[in-house]
Image 1 (cartoon, rainbow, N blue to C red):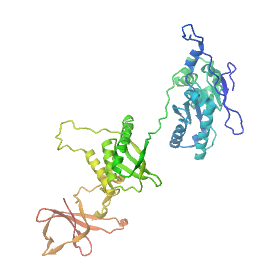
Image 2: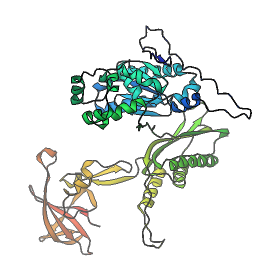
Image 3: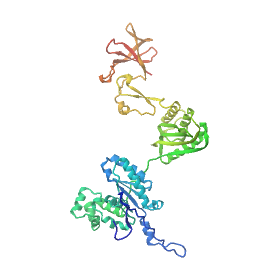
Length: 492
């Protein structure tokens, strides 16, 4: 498409592989205005025009994404936005489309043709990997909405002067506008087929018939209204390494270097108001696989001293297969940072308690003992006492059945913390129960029966008994069979 008013509008090449056309570069910059005797440049029309067209927006329109669900559309657009950051630092999201600012990259890439070739290679390769159609529409112009309208129409055009937008967009069909069914019906009844037909109508009448959003959409395309953009923010990533000047076999000599790398990590997290709960510390060797130290935290942190303490604890029990030539730190998971809340009232330092202190102690204990050696106890929705508790790894979170909602289904009757692995049979002498000495029942019974589909036939009457020294026991009597008495647990 060519603008009869100016030669500034140049077509972009087609994506068809058989086409040998190339994108034409932007025209050369106009000559600078003449200078006065004092060396000061006189203001001219070229300076004003350049100030008005300080942006060039490149749009990619992907209609094949309409067949996907919204979640996959968002995921794919985020991935493509990451590719577009290779040519632009400003990438904006739009329905089935992405728009990036390329005016600031023209000098670096020596023209828009190389920008398009690079984007075409990245986008088509990614679409091929997803199994989608590899074609897409594209266009570039000084406004975001204008480039979107051109891309939706299939006019792969380049318009780098804002004064040419009106004539270029006027030839587009009204189908490229984002309109509802009623608005399209009204335009059809009025005989309006192209955007140039809308230019002839008064804006106040358009606003009354179609709403202010319709007029604002057109003004944005022409550069007469501001356009807020939803920019792409890449996910945070942190990887840093250090090549040692000589091989090191003693891990203690590695601590100052590791401390410096952790300082860089904590500074990175503070600048972005983040923390981390999982990071990997790698020790690289000359001709062997690297030694990986996986540091997982129960509670996300960005404390340099705490991370250094965990790393020293790992070093204490680590044996390396070969001398170390380099070290690397990589963050595997980022978390939002939540500052600790101090008490409003002053407390004695000797009696002050904090959950974070306990969490740090448990993480240090796990680093010293190794993975899967620190356990936590959680409840399970089971009637049988032998299966009513679970042992989980300290870093493993309990399932949904162990959330706060499950606490309402837990029996209100007291349960002992210490259950015997095998219930111990109690003796009966002259009608009295004995556990080393006579015991007496203080409460009960509580009947516990398992479901028939549980695979374990449990039918018992539980009681709480007291020994001569005051300790409490959890005992039960079989409901069927010989109806013997057993000791099952001890209360604290």
